[in-house]
Each structure stands twice: as C-alpha cells, then as structure tokens.
Image (cartoon, rainbow, N blue to C red):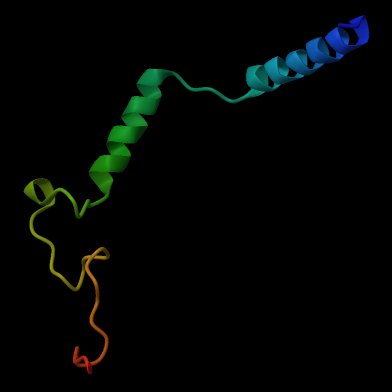
Length: 73
C-alpha cells in the first residue's frame, strides 16, 4: 500500500473525527428530562391505560369511513 493512499485514508479519518467533535451534545440527564417531558405532554393512542379510551373518530390509526360505508361487490 502506497504512502499516498495511507495519507488520504488518515486525512479522511481526521475529517470524520472533526465532524463528530463539532457536533452539538447535551448531557444524558438533560436528554432524559426532555424525553420524559415530551412523552407526558402528548397523548399516545397505544396506551389507553394511561390516557383512557380514545374515540374512534379521534384515533388517527383507525380506518376512517368515507361516505355511507357501503360496498358493492
């Protein structure tokens, strides 16, 4: 392997390390608090024991009927 190829690999590796270093970071404790606040502020249709039963018309995952709901075969 030539020295030029090794140099190019090393430069590319340094570039990736520099990008990782410059990435914004927050402490795990702060990220945990933000995640807990987010989850408590939004209703989750999949957890009825916490948020209560969801009306079918408010459930975005329930198929909505259009028109009278009749089907012709």
